[in-house]
Amino acid sequence: MKIRLIIFDLDGTLVNSSVDIMNALNYAIAPFGFEQLTVEKTMSLVGEGVTRLVEKVLGRQTSEIGSTVLERFLDYYSAHLSDFSLPYPGVREALEKLGNYRKAVISNKREDLSIRLLDDLGLAGYFDVVWGGDSAPEKKPSPVPVLALLKKLSCRPDETIMVGDSTYDIEAGRAAGVRTVAVSYGFRDAHLLQDADFILDRLEELPAKLDLINGG
Image 1 (cartoon, rainbow, N blue to C red):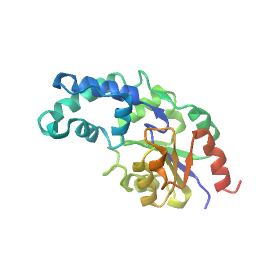
Image 2 (image 1 turned 90 degrees about the vertical axis):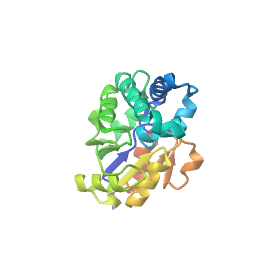
Image 3 (image 1 turned 30 degrees about the vertical axis):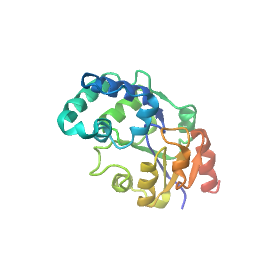
Image 4 (image 1 turned 180 degrees about the vertical axis):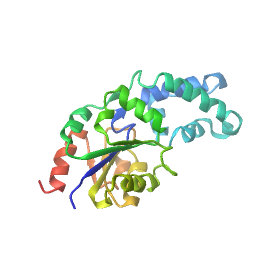
């Protein structure tokens, strides 16, 4: 069956948003005496949505100050969503070449923030659907958002491929029965992504890979 639909992750796959997320986290935790986070540390924590992100940073103090830190994070991040965020090299070019495919985003970032970020960077128009972590009853690595999106777009798993930079994307895709593509340039080390069907070093490699899969 030929691929008709490509589902992309957002942060670490289409967009390098690490500095803006780091800045929002550091603002959120500043009054509470936590050590300021680096970009590298921030990237290691991102992937399961903002609530889980805050829990990872605060640890046992989550129950005491979690709601305040979460509110501070969202306030700051919403106001500085794309100060430093940029598409990864080759992303726009790849999306242009994939014009014959249906394309969607499933992020664990909240839907409104996902849409705004793509819009700010001039990428929103490439996608038929943009979903966030609050768009379906469960987040990645659950297959629930993938299966719900397939139903919405009337696509079969064997007509779909999922592209992401983390194990959450690969696990969600595999559990939903779709082929998976990992990108090595994102927030996770490539050695963690070996369960993907394919690993790409640049998104610009994806159109040629899909041509091979589709026999063209």
